[in-house]
Image (cartoon, rainbow, N blue to C red; front, top):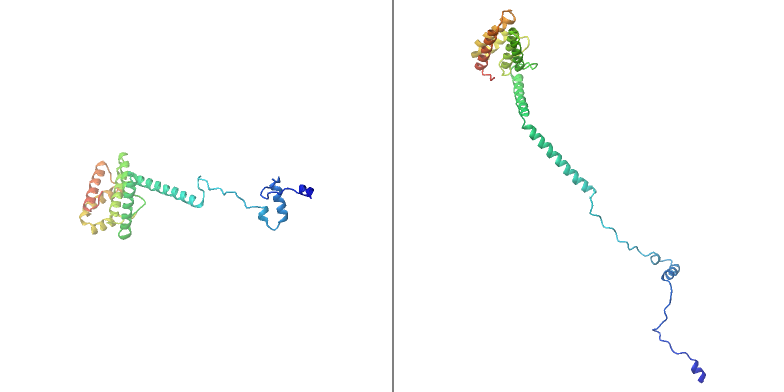
Length: 224
């Protein structure tokens, strides 16, 4: 009995256990093989943090649309500025004034008389001055008469028809502007004598025609 008592082991404290050295990965592999129906044990959820958008240039649809509208607005502003500057130039103002005169002449042509658009009175007078410088007074007189008829036509007084006789033009002007008829008849006489009568024409005849021309335009109310 005394021998049995000596051989009995001493009680062990259950709270004190020896440390077991085992690899955690091996334990997880064994657990995975045992519990194959739970994949979350073997494949845990990813803990990767999603990356935040960078602070660089935004190439999204709204960003592209915004910059396109900005560029378009700048282009429209530049076009308006160029037009405003061009509209202040003397050439542009002269073009607008000429356009206004053409519109007025078109109304005259449509409502009252016929106007020959193949050549303007200023062109006829420029040619008359060239003929005068070269001593061709007969040709200068013809050009001045055509310019006079053109001025009267553009103010709705007589028709400007190439090939029309001076007699028809005299009658028409006498009906609408009797006060200018006498001066116009004298100017037409000079033209007829020089062009159809082959009379000698010199610088004094050209000067006289220009004086009669001014009188016709003043009495007929045509501004020069």
